[in-house]
Length: 159
Image 1 (cartoon, rainbow, N blue to C red):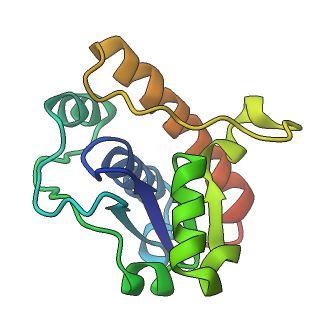
Image 2: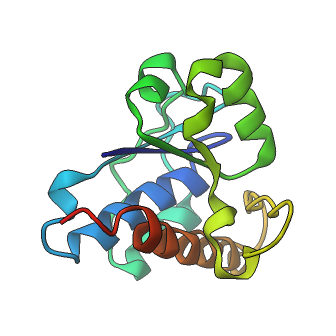
C-alpha cells in the first residue's frame, strides 16, 4: 500500500506526518516494508527544508526530518497512491478538481481523529507556520493521533 500525505507547502504538517507514519509503522514488525509513505504540497514549493520547529519536534518524537526537502503535488504521486491523506478541505477540493479519477482515494486526515467520530464535517488540521512552538505541538498531536487511528482502521490487515 502507498500512502501520500498532502498539505500546502510540504514543510511542516505533511513532512511531519510522513515521518511519523514511517516511524510508527517501523515499530510494528512487518508493516513498515509493506507500506510506502510520501508527502507533497499543493503550493508547488520544491526543495525547501522543513521548518526548524518541525525538525525539532520530529526529533523529540524519535525520527529525523533533516534530510526532507519539499515536493510539489504531481500526477504521478497522486496516481500511485492507494490512500491520500490531506490536512484541509481545500487540499481535498484541489486534488479532486485536478485529478477527479483519484477522488475516491482522498481522505481528510482529521476524519481519523478519535474526537471527529460522528462529525458531519471534521475540522481542518491547522497550519502552525509562524505560530509559537506550543501550536506546533498541538498540531502534531492531532496529526499523530489521527495517523494512529488510520493505521488501526485502514492498515490493520498489513503485516
